[in-house]
Length: 315
Ligand code: SF4
Image 1 (tube, rainbow, N blue to C red):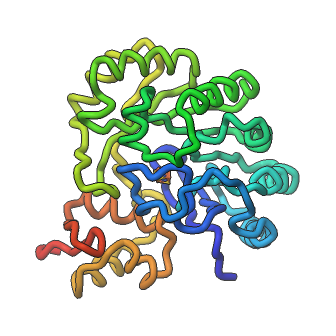
Image 2 (cartoon, rainbow, N blue to C red; image 1 turned 45 degrees about the vertical axis):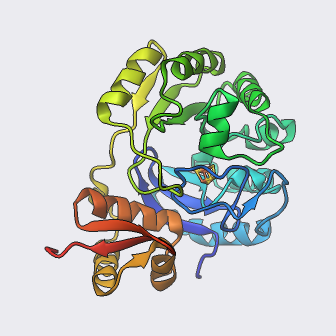
């Protein structure tokens, strides 16, 4: 069976071996973050609906899970914001009922947690990984370029509320640092107050490791991240370590890496081109591109049609 809504299992730096479940079409999101790796948001919305049919997702899950694959997590993530799918709760309930031994995680931008229905639908996952990059409206607008109906105060209250209502769901909250915007002393000090209120189990600092949607975004240095970490302590903050060894997982397919290299040594391609040529989900492809970049095997260049990847000569 060819899957339209499942991808992987992919080795994930935070989740181990994770089966991805994509509940929205590319690219439906409530934000249009400057660092987004899956491309610019084309449907910037907060309207919840069945963006992909729940029944199709459930059929694919039933087919995939019937062989009892070894997984650390089944993860709702993908090319947009999963909580925008109004059937996410039904899908979560289906997995919990039929496959209770699998752990569920949710990668979300957290913008819809102000909605009681959303909190209720996703409150049963084992691990929630929301993001919160800004605590002032100015930084929020610059980094996350939200749907105009979203209000930062409401988003923060939603995260606090979720934490109170679902204390058994582990929360790892990601903060993506964009130098010059959310790394100032004033921003970090306010961020600390807000994070103290939300009280996640872990706070994970991240920064750019591949070109994002906007070309002006620069990565923060290790030193900058360490300084921010120091300022946020004693909160439980960590810098998300670079993904080092995807190859140790059997699901990291060596032949895919080779095919990507062969393809982009013939001609430079965008991530979109590569997804089409190789039949890979954008999130899965990103894992390979990240690994190849860390091994210094590819370069990337921003051109009119997007970011083009090419193989380095010495491969
Ligand atoms: S990074 Fe996540 S929240 Fe931001 S635009 Fe991309 S998919 Fe949406």
